[in-house]
Image (cartoon, rainbow, N blue to C red; front, top):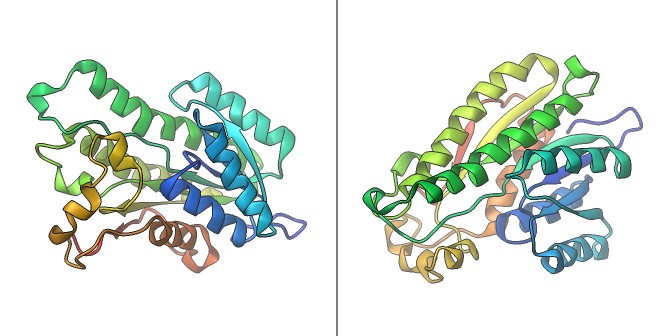
Length: 255
């Protein structure tokens, strides 16, 4: 893991960290020694619960609110981190949304725009600000970025979420391009493609039972857990993955 001159691991910002994969990743980052910035959009109580869990386990964390679809809020978020927390050395671009199942010929332009604003534009803005702080080109000491994609990016999600799948495919390409751009500046950039994971995101798409209903389509015959995805994310942030950049790791039970 990137270390600062004082030997500390600095701050890890985990976006969308009030629930699911983000919350599990925040807990695991704290256990690995980072000070964790727990980003949330609107559920302050859930973010506070994650912070309390980290502190109860002996870690250090603060909740930080920002709607990442608003670039001005992203800039303000990173300025807040600069003022309140140790230097940034890790970013997990996890925040994202799905919507109700629909065919492409049923999608509104507004829905597609929202899907890309939440799943792509926010990740670009956060990565831009992170690189400005971590890259040796900008006087930083290095760091690592992990972008959370989805197996949908290579499966297409026909009849379900083609717009979501397309947004996540954009994240895969973004991961590769950014990794090549900053590889010589001390910043590694990788991605994780979760498969069907048993989290609350399915309920937000109107299908709370989706993970277990689709378990039979997974070679491992079950949905994954948020903790299993978090383990992959934190491995990619760590020095154990020091020669990995531009990689996208499938954690999808073989699907």
